[in-house]
Picture 1 (tube, one colour):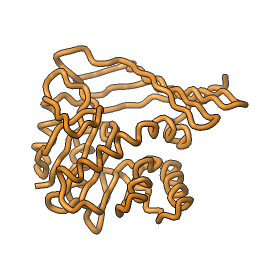
Picture 2: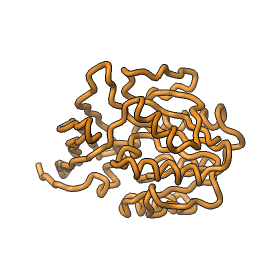
Picture 3: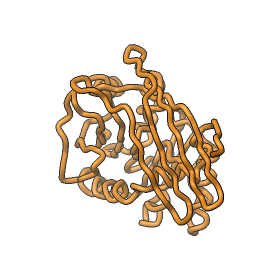
Length: 258
């Protein structure tokens, strides 16, 4: 098997397959969030949009969409996908801690841990302030992330697979270091890629910022623009809110700009 040591985000075709396999549950959940918690939601924004797996489907559903991502390969993949479907390519290369969106959006979303790439308190706070400035009053920010539970042992590894035609990718994610004092969690992540003519492994390490429930609440309180409209988890069931406690490992916060 050929092995490449590189950034997984530089391989958008494989990234999109792995992380796009659950798009329908996320898509339906977002539409239900907009209807239940929002008001007249038509203009959408996704910071850290990646390959646009949700953006282009929301555009096809009639929403006005914008997205940014720091990775040029992902943004190019996203925009080429838009063009193939006759949609306006609206993703830009930009930093999710330093941007200004005009006109303001009715809702924003960041579904799976991209927020945790911001490894300092200043970066996290800057991002929330950018989102707040990019939303109209009453606008929603749907933010999904894994937390560090304090009452149970956190999950250390997981694997999942996805297939599209003759392409199959298996991903393995394993924690190699967790420093709760410095609030960093380092993961080793691999893609095992299989096609009829090639077997390839891509290896990378990813560093995330850790969040306990109190730490996340303090951050929201410090930023000050959002109230929590609802709490869900990665099951994406709109009729099932969760009790957020010290055992919670994943949360989808539906935040409303006050």
